[in-house]
Length: 139
Image (cartoon, rainbow, N blue to C red; front, side, top):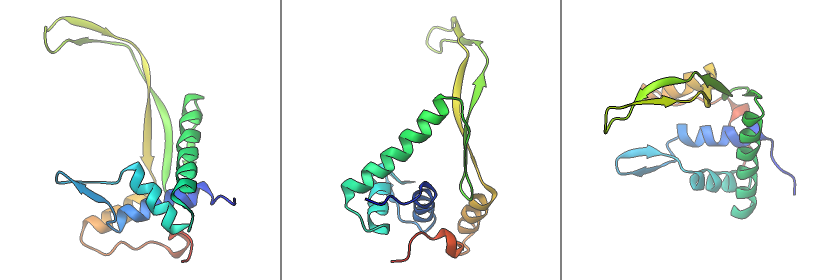
């Protein structure tokens, strides 16, 4: 089975969101992993099971890289990395007592300028212009 490149899959998900192909659940607009798998399946003309393997492999790869301290950069989409949070003293909201919160790494996503521009164009009522090379495979 020939797998599409990771960038193509991520662009499919971005385009799916921008074009409004997402479920509305309890008044919130969101796209679930199942929606993404379905969209990938349609876009690359594969079975849902094959598309699920691809999407899972992409997510697993991103998580594995972040755990290893690597930065993931996908041109036209954005970058993933971790940020270090220092330990601090917090408060238990129920009792008000002081609690030591340990240092930790958190995942962080920074969208690319291109993604921000496309999302903002669609938010302002303008049609979302997606460059032809970013529209995914031709049907």
